[in-house]
Image 1 (cartoon, rainbow, N blue to C red):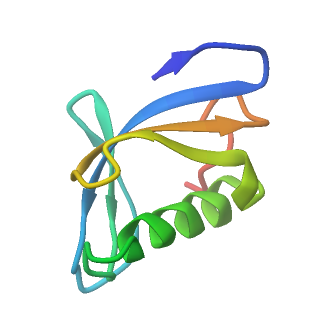
Image 2: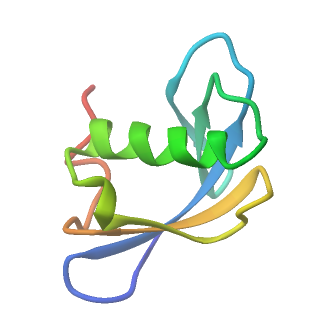
Length: 91
């Protein structure tokens, strides 16, 4: 995880599309692993990823941007309005 600006967090994400459940799994190497039920076609998995992050981190969807990895399982995501994931994720 990397902080760039005040109130902004950039994180690496490893997605697992076509899973049986959707949700944040936890750390996966230097990334955060997230399971998605959507297939990786026509941006469906990316849309679901933003939905999951917004819901779990309690931020607006517009504050989440996939910076790189649009068509990859390994992504970099920028989230505005937070400085730490740990303070936002329900235990």
